[in-house]
Amino acid sequence: MNQLEMRAVYAQTLIELAEKDDRIVLLEADLMKASGTPVFMNRFPERTFNVGVAEANMIGVAAGLSAGGKIPFADTFGCFASRRAYDQFFISANYARLNVKLTGTDPGISAAYNGGTHMPFEDMGIMRNIPELVVFEPGDPVSLKALVIRCALHQGCTYMRLHRKQAEKIYTDNESFELGKGKVLKDGNDVTLIAVGVIAVAEALKAGKILARNGISAAVIDMHTVKPLDTELVLEYAKKTGAILTCENHQIINGLGSAVAETLSENYPVVMKRAGIYDEFGEVGTQEYLQKRFGMTAKNYVVNVEKLLKKKK
Image 1 (cartoon, rainbow, N blue to C red):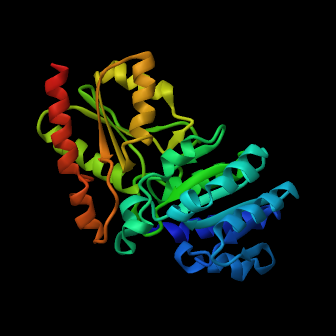
Image 2: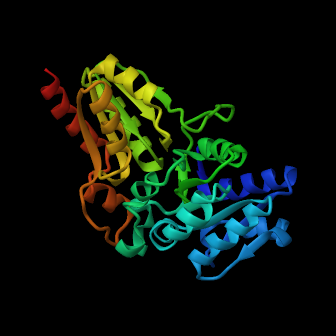
């Protein structure tokens, strides 16, 4: 089976972790069905806490549990996890050097029919500002499971963007992952596409195939961890290909593109372009419509690469 529901993989991974470690606990803000975690509550009712529609309080409770030696995973929509509970997460969890694992679901356009109010285009940028925080976004079900396990083992706070719906498997089940280390999905010599998240990674891979048919050798990298960024890999491929296109389901301001641009400008400047949301709010629509509306398609990535290569020459 090539497609799996991401939230189901997330919940099952938490169950497997909790069966081995009684410190694992789950907190929800009245969105358990959306997060796919009722199965965790059924398995571990005494380790599940639904605080209701009170996201900031959820972070405070998670911080208290962490201070008491637990490893709390706290879930809610990405718009609420970032915009609504930011101060509590910054101060009560991160500044206090605790161990809270915050998950923001439905990143970017994957919020679809919930529309612009629920469409976090800025959450990754907000979280990048927190010192020492690990910020990551799995690109498929296999990387999701592996990175959640890594997240649980990591001592310190994390923020994960979780695409909760169906996603195509791009990795084999035995693939290994590390937080802060990108994965080369396709090698190339002319240009590098650096992508993050289910939608952007899948479309970048499609773009790589189209470019290959057009005689362009494109490398594709899944940069699942935006902070800390795998600067060694970015610089390696900047030197190898001389052109970088970043692809993300997020504002180009302070997201993956900004992180890559900061690295290149200070170490090895090459021609680059950021493909993502250009300083706009979200809107209601199907994912297919929204991908076209905001240029999050293989076709648009190919157009951007062609422009980049003209600059490179």
